[in-house]
Length: 138
Image 1 (cartoon, one colour):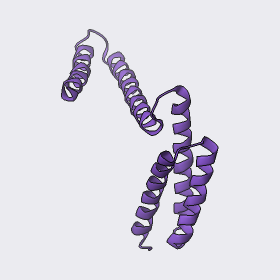
Image 2 (cartoon, rainbow, N blue to C red; image 1 turned 90 degrees about the vertical axis):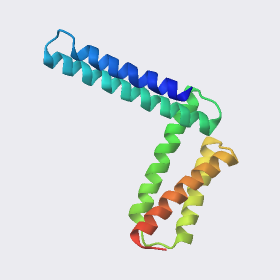
Image 3 (cartoon, one colour; image 1 turned 45 degrees about the vertical axis):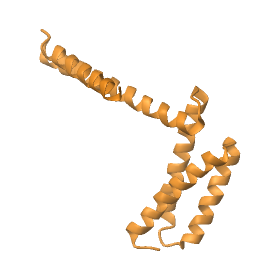
Image 4 (tube, rainbow, N blue to C red; image 1 turned 180 degrees about the horizontal axis):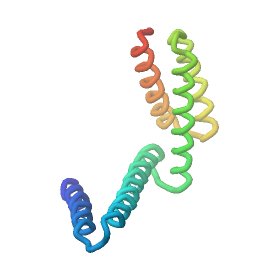
């Protein structure tokens, strides 16, 4: 069933592009129209992926859970980037304590469950560990 919808989706895109390209409009107008439609499709795909991740994380999907997921994601990315910049030579134990403090702060602020907190913790630890390995640190 999944393959059917994937085929339907890509078939629609290809059909649309062929239709636009064979339309009796000026080339510049056609290219502009294609760019707008591609941008619109990219936004729709990104929104659907976000909806899926937010639903997976919270177990339900509402505008509030979607916004909360985006905020948590943004804060987590900022935290990891700061860790990469400022703590590249710090011991893993110190980094781990900073991660724990950040996660507890997020957990309290957004009233997250243990399962949700664990997901964030695993993701941060994985990203920070990968950075440490890439930098040759332990």
